[in-house]
Structure formats: C-alpha cells, structure tokens
Image 1 (cartoon, rainbow, N blue to C red):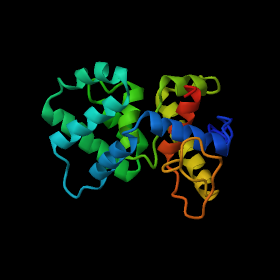
Image 2 (cartoon, one colour):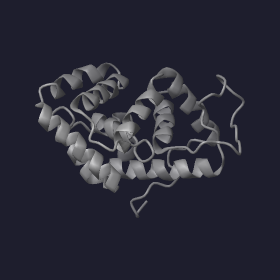
Image 3 (cartoon, rainbow, N blue to C red):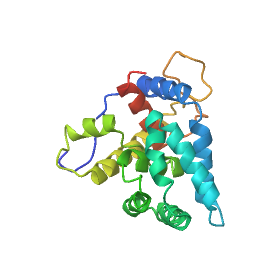
Image 4 (cartoon, rainbow, N blue to C red):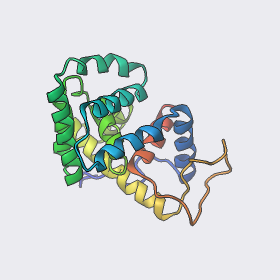
Amino acid sequence: MNHRKLPLTFFKLSDSDFQKYHQKHLLRVKNTRAIEAQGSSLLVLQRHPSFKQLRDFSKDVFGWGGRTGARVRWRTLRIPTRNFRYAFLTALFYIREGNFFLALFSIQTVKGLKSFSYASKHLRFLCPERYGVLDSIIEKHLQTVFSDLSKTHLLYLYCVYCQEKAAELSKKRLLLSDGLPPNPNIPVYSNIAKPWKAADVDMAIFAKFKSW
C-alpha cells in the first residue's frame, strides 16, 4: 500500500464473484457491449470521427449512466461543435498514445464532463481494455485507504488495478459471463476464454457494491 498500488485482493471478490457480478451487470445494463463497440470503433478510425459520431456516442454513454446521465448531459449540449469535437479528438489521440492523464484532461475540458464519474465513463467506453469508472461508490471505497490522493490519481490507481486484475483472470482462463446461462454453476473456466478487460473488472466490482 505504501507503493501507491492496490493489491489484487483489495476488493475481496473471488473468481466466482467476478463472474457472477459481471453477469448481473450485463443483464441489468443490456447495451454495454454495443456502446463498447461504438467507442472502440472511434478509436481505430483512420479518419477523424465526425461531430455527429462523437455526439451520438456521448449521448449513449450518458444514457448508460442512468437517470443522472440526462441531468449531466444537457450541460454539454451548449458546447460549440468545434470545441466539443476538438476535446474528443484530443482525448482519442492521447488514448492511442497511452497517456491517461492528458486523455482525461481533454475529456474534462467539455463543460459538464468535469465530473469524474462521467468523464471516466467516456474513457471507459473509448478504451475498455484500459479504463474503469470512478463512480462515487468506488471512490469512497478507495478513499478509505488513499484519503490523501486526488480524484485524478484515485482513478489512475483504480484503472491500473482493473488492468492487472483483468490480466490475472484472463491467465486463469476464467470465462467472461457473456453467453453463460443465468445463475450458472460458477466459476467456469475454459481454454477458449476471451480475455477480460479493465472495464469487465470494473463492472463486476460496481455490481457487487450495489448488491445487484
């Protein structure tokens, strides 16, 4: 803990827990994979995405966030087209460069996205392999140990944890819950298991804390 790193046992979820709560999250928020595909496609486009593509993506991310999303989103609608698009194109550039801090800063230049919860949601869908979401329930849990860290560094710490936990679960060949029957006999392992992403780990942790 003195090295500013979360041990992989920090959230106290077993392999069964990760599989079970991952499934609960996917079943509760059914458009998750579609928005991930939408965000990932923006990252790999050879040409810069259009304003409409970015606005549609952002609208879907806000919708994924639930009731609070609509209240936060209206603030972004007042942003001039050029500014909105520039902020997202800059964020995409820094994500490709692997620069977490500047990617986050770029997203937060959009009025209405200074909130770490929704800024990190946008990052999470643009690059689910690397990013999780700093929702208040996660932030409070992290602050019990790292009360002196800024939200920026808490999010960074959490994303690194999610990446490392995803690598561990992938190495164990733990199946993602996609396609598993409801309430399977878990944990289920397979040699053909797809790799876990940071966002998959984040979903399971969030669902566990919400008691879904």
